[in-house]
Image (cartoon, rainbow over all chains, first blue to last red; front, side, top):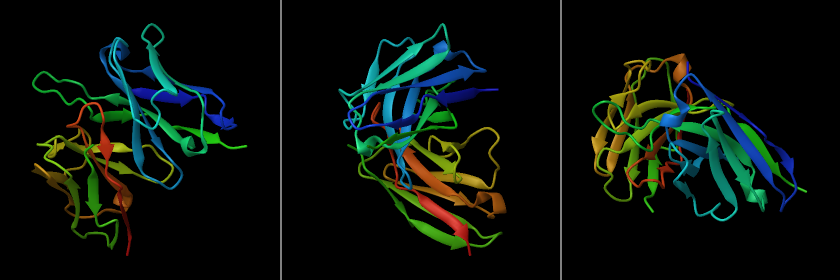
Length: 125
Length: 108
């Protein structure tokens, strides 16, 4: 069974830092792209960042570029999101999500087939 | 950037109703369109991928159609567990994926 479990959320002051983790199990973690998606309270879903399977390629939404860093440790089956220079508008539940990738016949990059339960990040003084 | 819109933003329906939600992209995205269901306090769940393919384990009352810029999600007979918010998402513009604003389905 695929499981994704986020941790590391909490209350942080504006300008502060936080590192989120996502522990993966039930699949070959090193074979899949992974993503972070966030959801501000009462709002919709927003894609934040993506990392490819070996960690050599990353992408970010403009709103977090230069402040957030996505990384992974395939030996530990863990995805990370280092968040620096946090702002009030970064307050959200952060989800890690697995990318569906390719089947034997087709590729579905950018399709999020499994999600963690989310971890809440609150940026406030 | 590709913008996604959904209509309606909310709807009230009864158990057994046929429900249709529309999603529109600001430019052609071929069939790179996914649908998710989210219940309060829970993570989103993938329902439909590639516009019309049903994710494993999802009931067959859910179906998707469309290509280009216009897409629909249909629930053929609404069940109590289907009351939730539904999001469309484009996966055409890799890796800058965007979601629609959501459609909340509640009980009439």
